[in-house]
Length: 612
Image (tube, rainbow, N blue to C red; front, side):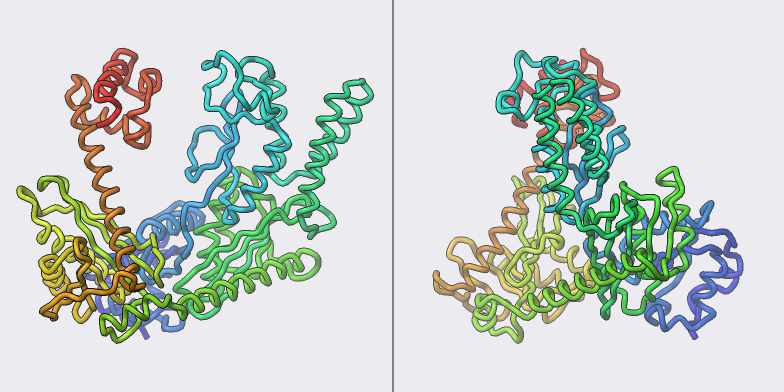
């Protein structure tokens, strides 16, 4: 039985009975686990007054020092809040959505008189229509290519009809646009076309094909042969799209089928999107840290972390089995869509067959990806084996971490760490640092010491795996500074070397003389590649800081441009480069800026030649 040795019983008794979210923290205040509950008192007390060893690891309860609760208005609100908090804090003991990254969306700017069709990774409340997210980026781009072949959607960035060019661009002359920019296509005709594009993105190709066939016949009867030919080409394209989609439900209808598969500490969640009875696409996402989680917990985590965030939701969603949060999910989907979304668990019939298909897909994707990951882990480039021999390491250094620092006259000192796995960059593990305690004269040794200590202190605190080899960009001095930092961070016996740029000498901690590898050595070329990547990464960060700092300094010289307006400019344009390229009119659209102030800002930027 788990004991609440670090949490007072009085506090457990005083917990609210309302629904909400609870956070378990350790003695240092770090979040260990985030959960949701219909009744916070019952759920949290249940963690300590029952045997939780089946679903939660004992070390979780050994580390809990405090419980924090957030009361919500409903279970659905608790479900969404839990998802947001897990995404923000990534607690160690929660189920993890491993590929939880920014998948692309298709954005149709229906808030504009002449809408455009774009790809974006950021959803905004700007009145546009968003479709996605698309885990299968290839399928998304194939659909967009088909749409562009069928319809003459403008690709320009003019703010029509306010901004009007003198003449149409090349797209008009090659038949890719009908030049609405110069009034050669009416807004009504253009928006009718966009309406058809929306139907394709919604998966309603069959209904659209029927409409196109009827309009083609009407155009032919009216002797509008050119229009009839255009509609004929559209109809053929829609029929080609329909042929690519697999028929799953002969009765038609729109629905999603959600399923999971589990293998040890890995799981896969799959969504089959069915529109008008045809399989429009499949999304698959990997989850980790699930060994002690039940199937219901895994399904709930997948739905809350990914599915509830979908933008294109049908009226019915099929699940393979009932789970505790089913009603909360149904309520959350209804709140999101503004209509009822039925969450169903079919037992037999055609809908159960669709669910079984989703389960098979989840099992297949999980087996495929787990086997691929294992195979990749077992294979190592020959250069890594050569490196192990040259450095006399106990094991092949599959995971290599490299540090570099960059400074300009002792100011704006920054550091970076890059991670290579089996000889290839693993960019999710890249880290940047703004050196905080080194000022005045340049001191690369002190900067390296700070960066290395901060990296490994946090790594140890988060209980994350360590690399097999650490590479320091520099010589004996940088290597010694890194060794001191690693010792303070409690990281010992971790193979560490330094690679000096000038003669490509390798320094080892206990060797009196550096090691020189042959220039054609695969091991040396790999080390150079990793070192050069670290150098590129830290310089990119350094340039961005210098550019931003110079820009803020230049803006600060303008009367009336204080910190708030500086931040407003950077938030509006999103990057320094975009602000530098902005016109007076674009700057004037930023809240708090009028035409007069915008003109002053633009002149200040231009006075620096566009380079700050």
